[in-house]
Length: 238
Image (cartoon, rainbow, N blue to C red; front, top):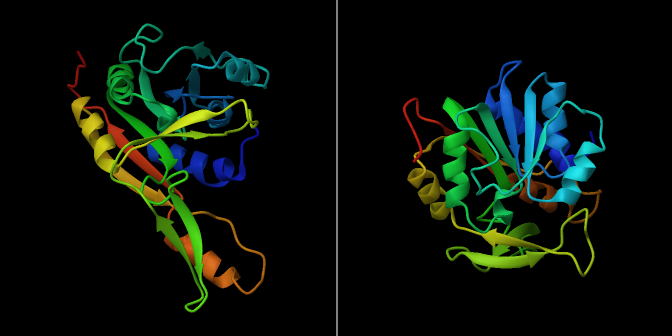
């Protein structure tokens, strides 16, 4: 199935739990990448489909076992690839922050979800994990690890290197948004937030002078945020 330790231990189990799915339900893995979560769902007896804008990542997804998973090449802002009101759940794992326009994405989520279907998105915590604008620090007097945040309230476009294309010529733009931007866009799409969770790292430091402070900081300062929305029984996106 592959995927990082964070995917395996925190993100995928958490998203699956929040989707509250029963066997045989149909789920869209939005911005599915190499299809790791799509295959995870298949193992859970969930009918999964993937959508991604990268032909190379979909080629990698199709190279894995799980040939019954349909993968669609397309942009999450485009309506032409998928029919309306067909999914019991939609998941977006660590990808929404790489999309420059979220309002049309959420409008499509509202269009593709069945009435009372659930959409769960998880992303690095927008308050504490802003690329290039947040950092770990060590207070030697108090012997505590702390998180420094230099910027938060304004939206930012930030270039970062991401796997599997980690080299100086391939980078991804990540888009930092404060929470109000996400909630405003969801509201405009007619989607109702019914759950928000903050997930901490499961890593542990090697024994040493700073290990206690580092481990405590990891348990206090979340790594991920997960938001769940529910499609209204009578919501019909225009």
